[in-house]
Amino acid sequence: MSQENAMQDDIVIDESGEFVAPETGHVELVFQALGDTVNAIAGTEGLTTAQIYFHGVLNASGALTYTQAVAGAEGFFANVKEGASKAIAYIKKMVKDIWGFFFKKQGPEEAKAVKAAIGETKADLESVDKVKAGLKNAAGSDSKDLVEHISKATSIGELNTLSKDVGKKNSKGQQALVVKIAQLVESLEGEIKLADEVEAEAKKSGEASYTAWATGVKSGVSGTQALVTTLKGIRDLEDIKAAESTLDALKSHADVISKALDASGGTESRVQGMIDNLSKLEGNESASDEQKKEGDDNLKALQLFVKSAARYSGLLKRTLSHMKSVNTAVGKVFGV
Image (cartoon, rainbow, N blue to C red; front, side):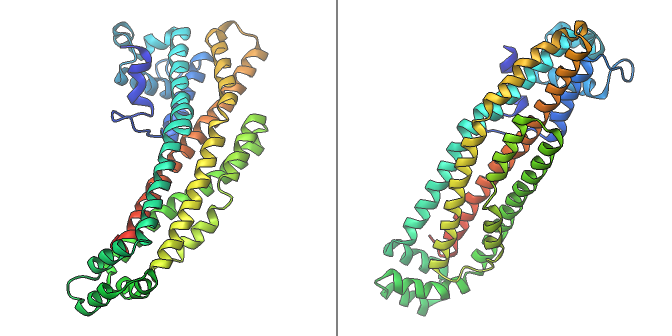
């Protein structure tokens, strides 16, 4: 098994090929393990907590050879070049999966799928036959008069009027929609919070590449608060027109996410430069103080990138999933 394949599932791609964003704490510990190794920082019994953690991660994922595994964490990290090389390879893989896989491949595919699903629901809501069948189903068997009126309707305008009564009767569907909207709102608010934090980190770090990244993340949530406000105002969908309006808002935001993913994928070259500079850390024991500082600064800047990208990618994936759920719930209120 190659080192890259051995680490595949353990980083951000699960067995089904789905992207799973790494936790912030995990990212921090991996970077800390690399920093502790190249700077020869000693902890309990010669190892720091981060090194012990990272050795366990590598061992569990199958990324260590038999000799490296049986030597134990202390023996493994005693060889600075070997320990640093494994940590750098792991970080490279993490970056490759976040940028190359999620931002450039799976994320755009999921955004496209969400837009397609919304388009299908809107098309159903514009079809007299499908709306008729849906409204009769959503009204329930105990609403004979309402069902009869629905059966006699011949236009979307008539059906829209009748959908108001259906919406009132379908309390189960309305309640399910409220739950799905609350989940989406939580994810959207998480994006807004992250954008503010990334912006603050960028100002504090003064690092040009990270500042450019922060600007992109911030612009990606420029209209998110308006959507949050709109969604929070929905307690019940009054009629089909209200449902279509909600779907339009979701579709617009899906377009925003597509642009945000494209912009995020475009930062890969900036991150790649920092990745390339990591190789200098492997021989850090013979570096000058100035070179060591440069290496440490590069490592800190890269850690900022990966931490924020891990959180951002996870939030975008969660948002897309919740948007799909809200789309489905909107349709179910009126049976389509």
